[in-house]
Length: 124
Image 1 (cartoon, rainbow, N blue to C red):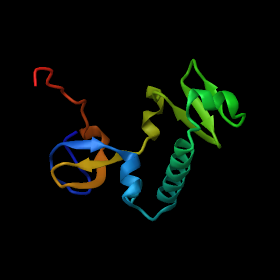
Image 2 (image 1 turned 180 degrees about the vertical axis):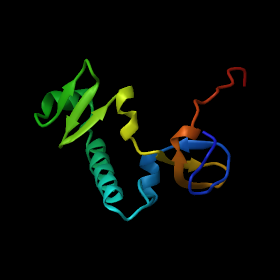
Image 3 (image 1 turned 60 degrees about the horizontal axis):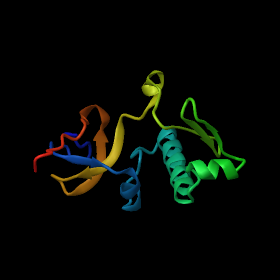
Image 4 (image 1 turned 30 degrees about the horizontal axis):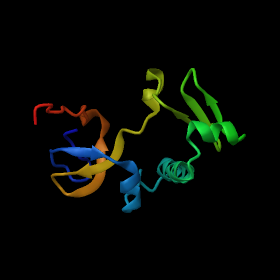
């Protein structure tokens, strides 16, 4: 990607939500109800992920998990996750992700519309 929301400087970034949260970044910097709700869901997600509850093996053993292999959807603790988000649901996504700016040497919010796939140099 090329834009970083908190630093406001162009440059290379790495999307890394889990490490950014570990370093104290917030998924939503606001103090309104939607920001608090998003922060709560992010905390519940990280807890479930660190417990290994998203693995295919866990969904066979844990009756509270429901996985639909055909749609790639997983229901866990009242939260819905997708392996790949359906295009018709993109409108309801938050416009930023957490990541690290190599220019600013800091974690911050990255605008999703500024991201692009990594272009690997296979001859390096």
